[in-house]
Figure 1 (tube, rainbow, N blue to C red):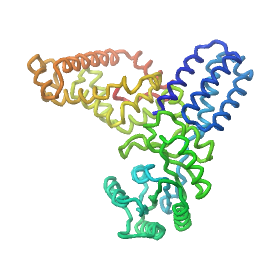
Figure 2: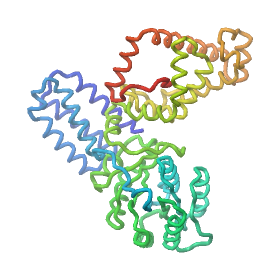
Figure 3: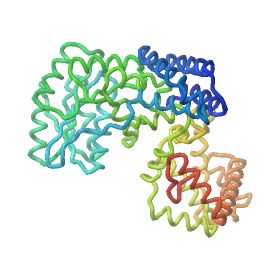
Figure 4: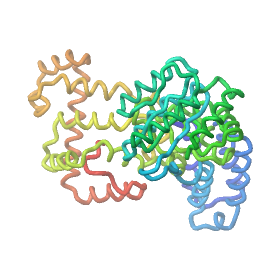
Length: 455
């Protein structure tokens, strides 16, 4: 996610942070580097010019040049400017109360991921206590209605459809009426897309909008299309009127041009980002957190939130007690690996870690490593998982064969486990080290990791 631009910004930030003094020449050279990085990231030219001019103007002021820590002060200006480009602060959906119906109209071009985004949004709102209904109003794309029905069933959310329907406006109106009669407080309307924004498409969307009076009219755009996504948003906003944007495939966007340009060009906020293929890979857009990731500072807050969503508090406390008593086993290690998997891809987790974000390429990530470790432990008997000391040469050979790995890999995993267990034992006995670790995590913005955090 945003690997290219993060790599450049991380280098700039490291250079600046170590400077005891900043000159106007330093400022101009740094801003020039940032300008090139933004242009290479496919950020809108006007947005780049505005960023460059305002950054130079503010950085050359007495506040930076005569600051006690000018490097850090300059970094803060860059961070603030990037956050402003992204939208300053998180924007929530303007939904009405649970006793009043809210309609969300999703629109966009074909292939942007509207149907997938619709079901992810429905799943999120359901988790938050809403009672959503998905409305199948894409009557153009073959199997679009069927796809929405399958996705709706997957998350146990009802889907309104009309067999053989040809009038999307009528289906939308009937869906709203159906939701009202059945006590469903949020209607998410999935509309038809085209390969380009043609007149017929826009006319249909205008008619649907008039018929259902949505509280949110949200464009679903592909983050990987860069400036095209921005131009599409501008077009839809001028003709239909948008309230926000959902960026899909954000996890695959190495440049970030769409995210960094959208708010400045359209004045409409990014509401959510799609960060993977799973239903739960759908996050609210926090400008300040994304800005932190772009600058290579990580995103501890999001990392902790992901951990809290996947780690059961009771299980975490049991794990903590096991560590304190030095009873950590290979079965516990397997449980921890599975918890990490639930939190998302290894790439996305690394992007959130301060000091690591933007420093490790996809080639350096051993994506198969975790799968091999799981396979090895799963090939062990219950007794072996609970007591690794009984795993002799014959057992290691059997485990390697059963997991499709080598004896060397089994040996490596057991050594890694023993080292981890020793580290946990030392940490459990050293209250000062524990306090220092929690203090460091708090300083990075996370307020401390939850007990039993799987790293």
